[in-house]
Length: 435
Image 1 (tube, rainbow, N blue to C red):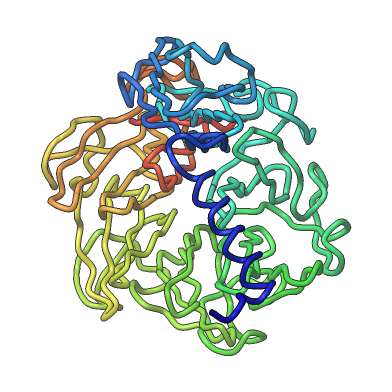
Image 2: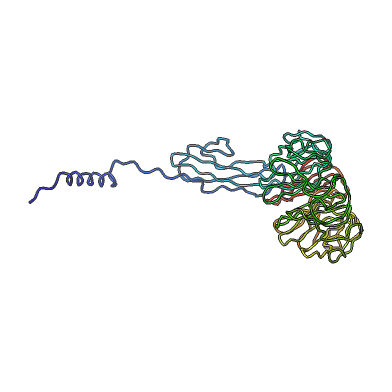
């Protein structure tokens, strides 16, 4: 028989050794089981403010480290009691020789809590939480990062509040009024009211006492449209259009600014090119008539919001109603009854308001109105059902706590993606969690 080549003998012996070591009687170490968090749950997704929730978990594998929100725990621990702040997300991390795993769970603490400022003390200070100061903040929106952007009207500035409550100034010099274009740090405004961001991140601001709309882009401020200190009603190009105390503002899907020209009693539209037209109402004609375009009439209108279909909703403070303007210009009254003030909840015309200011919209199409005259936040469903969700009519003090809590002259409201509300009340910013 022909002798076997040497390299084949080596391969054969190697294969025999490998086969023996992988068998049940071999000397190899068993593989380490993978580490995983099999479950991480809370006994309640909502509790009342100040109450506790129990978080529980199970693990597979053998952990050598376990942390909850960065705090080390015994690896044998399987639950923890927590007291959530507003809507709080807890993070569990298990680690060991089998790897690591991370899970989260969120619990909401229902109630009204202070985010920044002092409701009873005005000022200009930036900073964290209750050390910051505002002066009659009126309109609020949310940027893409979840920060609250605020028109701090009597400070003549736009301020930012992070989800953690840290306040900074976006543009303008708090406490200094005027009219000056240029770098954001030196620009001046005279009563900042409505504001809106376009899809490119440009910020538009109502400069109400100067009767112009300003644009903040690339670190600088310019005048977008209107004529400084000139009151009027003209539609047209940026340097021709005239306004009379442009107040609330929002932006539609096409990038048009929707403007409540409050002292003209009209709803105006400004295209991305700066061309102004009048959508509804007739300048100088005050009333509560529903109808098409110029045949409709308004009182002092504020706080517009636009839904996904292009419908505009505004608060009519003069006539204590919530009005709707379709893209075609048809005006209807969706809640309240013209000229009748009150705090009654109910369906459509049966409900009563006492001074709706800013209107906000949630993901389901429900409206929220800052009803300043009642010191409450009202909810209007898509069916027109009105309810009071935060505050108590006639109780005019900002006092956080369990719902209904109480507010003082709430002028601004915005809806977070979670459904929680950011509310401007007095000189402060509040959060209503799970209202």
